[in-house]
Length: 170
Image 1 (cartoon, rainbow, N blue to C red):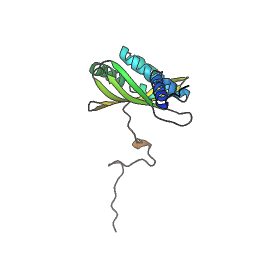
Image 2 (cartoon, rainbow, N blue to C red; image 1 turned 90 degrees about the horizontal axis):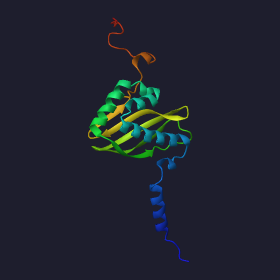
Image 3 (cartoon, rainbow, N blue to C red; image 1 turned 30 degrees about the vertical axis):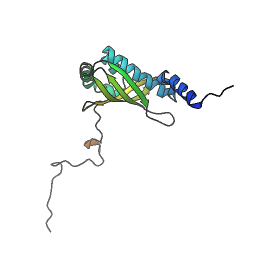
Image 4 (cartoon, rainbow, N blue to C red; image 1 turned 90 degrees about the vertical axis):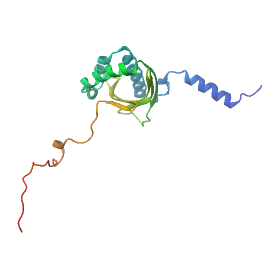
């Protein structure tokens, strides 16, 4: 019997894996849910179901209702159909609180980098945030602004005019 060359076997395995469903490589149920959520996001975007995407999203994403509905329609007009998404998982240990799905996305009118963050509720993935970069622009929904609001700082940060100033004489 002749032995099979290991390179041929590896090549065949790689070809078989390329045709598999992308959720097959997820290591835990939440990663599988997030990958399925990303596929559903693409399908809904292509159907023009911007409202459905919003309704199915995490509460934080839904706060940006006006931003999302406007941005979604603008993106659909400017980019066209979302043809492909080479979805990748950002590695996590244990049971993740959130899962990041990112990768190259191909639209009719260009290629972009997409990053989605997914939270979980009632056994399903909910879109928490979406970042799309390409063509010299970045769209981020919701527009996350980091930092603690001034009124929540301990002690509150002084704003000019908040405190009376006194000059001490020596």
